[in-house]
Length: 55
Image 1: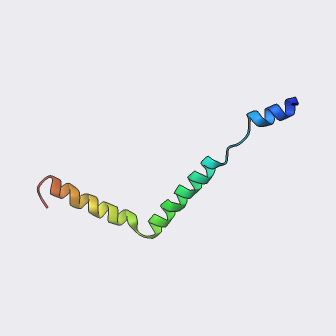
Image 2 (image 1 turned 45 degrees about the vertical axis):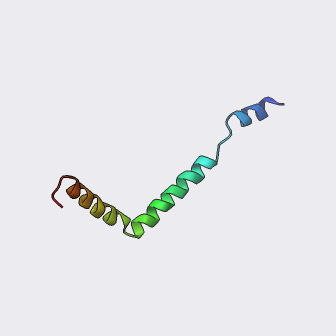
Image 3 (image 1 turned 180 degrees about the vertical axis):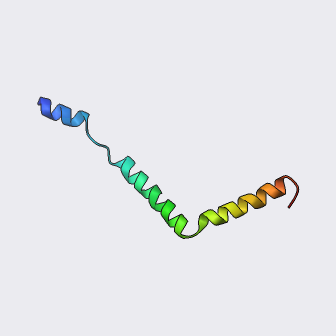
């Protein structure tokens, strides 16, 4: 092996973490487009009010 190929192997960029981050960002965008945050907050308020005995 040459020194150049050893350097190339040592600093090889892994692609899987980038694909995973892109997939989760895509899922977040789809969830925001489907108005999921409003539903989640609505359910959280309902759960909290029932936990403290108001709802």
